[in-house]
Image (cartoon, rainbow, N blue to C red):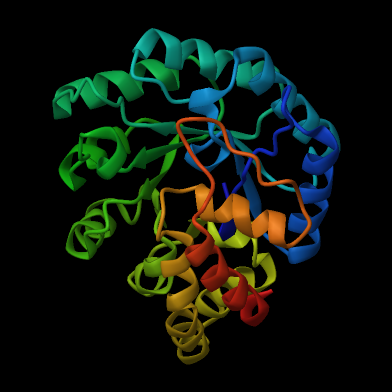
Length: 288
């Protein structure tokens, strides 16, 4: 699907719906920042609080503006396999280039259940699929041996690994490195994952600092590992600020500070505390 940086895009809101004027501005900012792909309707895009009509409208808007210019990957996951299948069919018909499919949340299925779930979704679409492992949110951890089975499915091309467990990520790369890409799902582990054989990052930080994150991943891909490592270490305080409250609260505040959108969130997410916002604002100046 891509190598380097894909932004896990925020969704800008008004009091009454999606702010499409701000979305257009955000998309221009990403293109100008040199990212390699966009992920829309992922966790950072707040799809859990969006209506189906809003999701469709966002996909249509992004496809209309950027189809053929950047790979457009759409979050199609659900905790009901039938819903994920329908999402896959819908976003395929709307022009997505690929799908991000999170492990079924709350249900906490077994490894066999995960294999069956991804098999069903993959059969519903010809598009390449990135599996998404984020146990801190879903309550289920896709083990490397399970993804090794899932990676045998033809159009499962990668996994976004956000377990935060570097040993697990290394084992995943060891098992599937010749079959599927392993993509960092944690901004704080991007370069370590890439230096072990990962292909890039699906990044929250690149919402605000697309040029910085893209440069860092390009360095890692191009063999300038010393610079990539230094950039990763320099970025650590910024990453901590972006995750000091639940994602995408800080990312939305940062976008507001940059003038990209108004920063509105939907409940149960609430505005960033003033103290944390000040820290984020001071760090933005270093990376944007």
